[in-house]
Image (cartoon, rainbow, N blue to C red; front, side, top):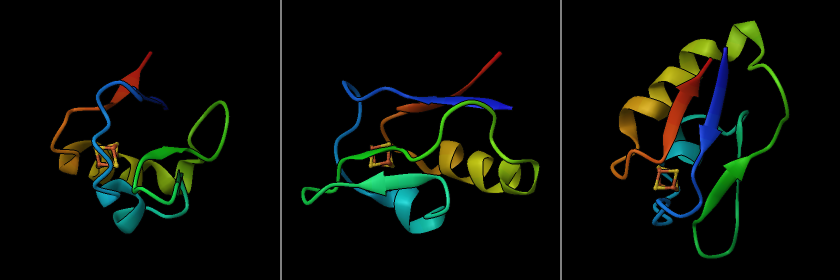
Length: 64
Ligand code: SF4
């Protein structure tokens, strides 16, 4: 599984970081970024899906 975070859509709620701190970094303003490259570790795929489902800006998506 791979995911992408679109920084142009991100509005800085840090909700993804709150739900899945293993996968995201957050800056001082709440804007988030992925803290890894490549595939989501298998054991964190459920957390990645949780973050996708809870981003109110649809800034996180699964990519092929
Ligand atoms: S939940 Fe979405 S909008 Fe909020 S910080 Fe994360 S990526 Fe950005």
